[in-house]
Length: 148
Image (cartoon, rainbow, N blue to C red; front, side, top):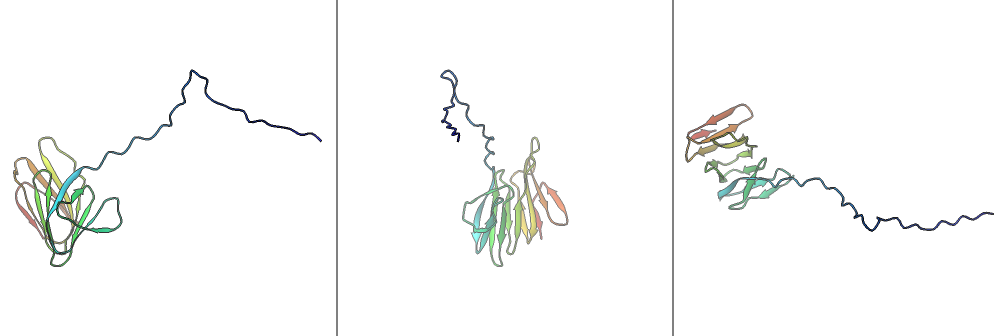
């Protein structure tokens, strides 16, 4: 009978070498705030781009790309975009904050109207633009517009 005895061998770095830290993928940039909710009336909900559930909206709540906002019958809300554009949501509306592709010299606001009525205003149409996409069409405007 032969017995083999294995001893634990300590493997490490020589004294003059330092251990290498594990490489981590760079962190994703934080989401950019595109707008905030104001003038909430009635039941208004927000669905975050990375979430699956509808959350109760709150006054001043920030909105990010691909977030959705929903109003029920009798409800309404105002969305104030970073560039000063204002969008008023009527009751029974569903909109999404679209990804904005900036253009030099022009501040853009992009949103998707999936259902309901939206009234939009721009402080300075000469330097602001608003793009509204619906399931059937896309409209770009430089003046006050109403979609229904």
